[in-house]
Image (cartoon, rainbow, N blue to C red; front, side, top):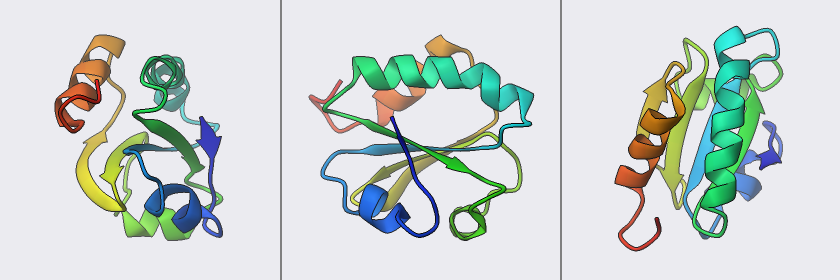
Length: 109
């Protein structure tokens, strides 16, 4: 898991050699705090095949605008800087896992 901000987002996310799951969240957001442990667990299990990057929506308006974030948590799955899919709102762990794994390139589960 890595934290990113407006200044280093390109280097951390767009230049990643593996798919990136961006979690746009805020410390005051209850659903964000609820989903965070499941995201961290999933990222740990998929280490080497998926990078989890957390971005505080309040402190990073450029990233929030880039993805049109209007509600948090917003999860954005990217590959080589291109959006693969977006999930708005918190999901239970098993649904998060299914969503992410179904969108990863073949063989990277």
